[in-house]
Length: 269
Image (cartoon, rainbow, N blue to C red; front, side, top):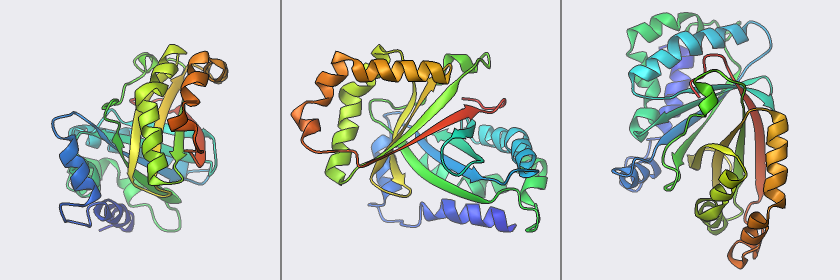
């Protein structure tokens, strides 16, 4: 097995390493059954400037996305990191109703002859000329009240759009649960009222800096983003909602990671 395939497979397998009924993914999958809640694998490929860019684009467009589609995974988002740490990086978002399918995706891909053939240049890149530097991956589950990813309207026409990926870390499990409740019970509604196009909301099941939640917004430009955030923060709805004692008794978000992403020409999101 190629070293890169092995590394990615090991990462996926580790998500299911605990086979007891109480494991995070098994519990989440059981709770999600019948409710239509998606799971997401979010990958960040850190690359070096130069030929790795073309290798990645060719691989994602011609090998990975078609193979994921055959597995029922999609729509697949592929984004350049425009503003944020560790540039250049490419983010890949993979949605599925099955946690098991996402967690074992590399094994399944390795059994797809068309994928192996189409992705050969990327998968078989030599150590002295690797296809990427490193991969970081998180495993997410959609919010109960926002069970599925919503593709922005501009995607169908390849219209101008930028995405904002926000990760909120909670100081404690209690604070994290309170922030999830806050977003599901009113904050997302205030976003909608202020013109935000919302793509997905999720909790992190496996990943760094737990507990945390991740969500994505879409705008037609950075100027629109700045305008809508300013209106949101100044709105009476937000001021009233965010100062409720059950949300304001202590800082319930300890750290925010905020990334601006630009979709590639072949992104399905």
